[in-house]
Image (cartoon, rainbow, N blue to C red; front, side, top):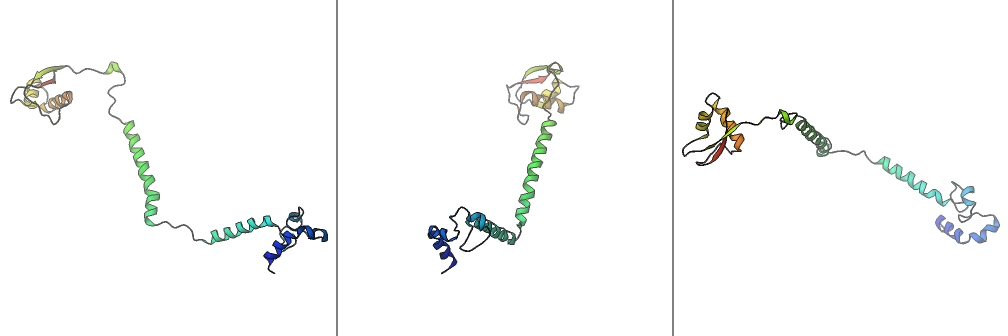
Length: 166
């Protein structure tokens, strides 16, 4: 008879063997008296998970350590570095934003302008030279393009545009 069938047999005969001094796993005193003893008498069923855990720990320790491939190392190091770089560039952009025109509304000034109608054959360069001959023509053309939100500095005959008056 094997040890397993003997244990199972003693479970069923436990009530008959209790009078003879045998302690089975169903007896309340068996966990106290037979702790750590294997066999039919005083077998501790609660010990088995601990044995299982010890075996699992041995198996885990026997496994080789985790190894990363080249791609894994690049992902592990590269992705956080890229995210950090994007965050730093975003913060630098917010802190050095050129959109701030003035500290208060009283410091803002309105550019004095005059409305001009574009004549046939006239270019922004000619208009800029006639409106402000004392200033550099390139600066005046840039001001006209900015004031009127023009694409590429193109104007059409009959178009109304704003030009700086001083």
